[in-house]
Image 1 (tube, each protein chain N blue to C red):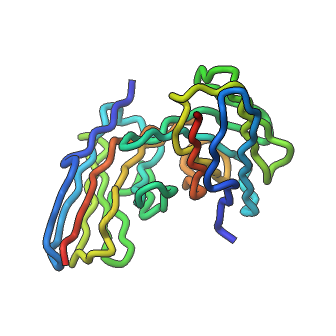
Image 2 (cartoon, rainbow over the protein chains, first blue to last red):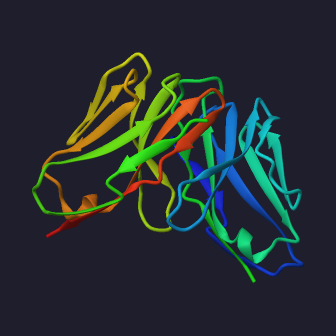
Image 3 (spheres, rainbow over the protein chains, first blue to last red):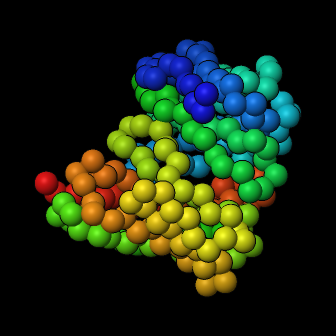
Length: 114
Length: 110
């Protein structure tokens, strides 16, 4: 199994809603990532988890809250988002986060904030 | 600060043509370079990974080269097909972070 699975594929939410994005991998990878991608722009790193601990937070607003319940799962909790947060949210994983490993990406969640 | 640039930004070619996509980066202290394909609104599919100690990787009709000292990589696509139409992204790895170029949007005409 070389897949990273993201749910849901599409999400529409209001600015007062609370929702969560989910990501799962069964490759035994110990590093997991959240990226944000606006239309026609490259992906931008948001968070990195290594061995279930938050390693990097790229100064992401607190309305985005990551969680890594175990080594296979990664969540992104959303609360009080703004319309400018509408984007494709991508999850990725790698064997470790130390250097030369290949990144595997999921198919993403297309988020629209109304 | 690492910057990754891809040229051209867009490319339209007839089917069957061989083509080269270019990627340059400013900091040569990279761990690896990875080429991805992205279809509209979809995730990223890994095409090739070149470690910093390697010069070249091949997979089917794809060949990627890396010249770390000059900060350049190329992706060569042989005998292009309409199904190759997508955005191609290069990404360099430095420690915990992967920095992406803006991509080359490729359209292969039948």
